[in-house]
Image (cartoon, rainbow, N blue to C red):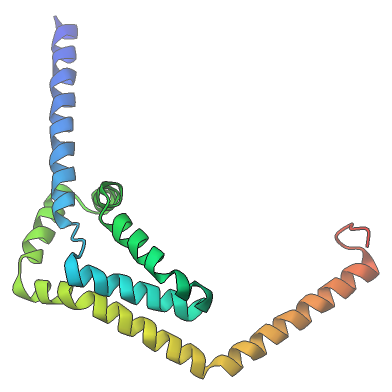
Amino acid sequence: MLKRILIASLFMFSFSSMGNEQQHFEAALDTVAIPQGEELDQMINGLLTAQIQSNPNIAMLRGAFETFYRETFQSEEFIHGCARIQMELFTYEELVEIKEMMDLPIFKKYQKQTPLFIQRNMELGSQVVESRKERLIFLIEKERARIEELKELDEQLNLTGSDN
């Protein structure tokens, strides 16, 4: 008799967990707000602008990247993946609260401004890096010199066991 009660309890608990898991996933999905239309275009434009600044060779492939990013960000795989990450980071109750916060007018404004905020931060980052380029060159040269010293030391003492 006790065995049947335990089995029935486990069976009911597993269905309850699956239901809770589904609710948790749906709450997480409600908090995944992928921009659409012009907002998505701004986000992709900011992302590509930053990539092209760091690698100008991809500028001629901008159209392909735009299409790829649009398809990727709107894919079920990406959206559901984001929801699963939310589930790892937040409880069901927290996700419900986040969704309520997302419905506030100030949050909607924040969301709308986020692509521009990210783009401007990337531009600022590029400007700061450009203004500090001499420092970067100095550090690179210093590191190259250190590597050369280590190579010479290795050749003299055969520390790595390599046959040069």
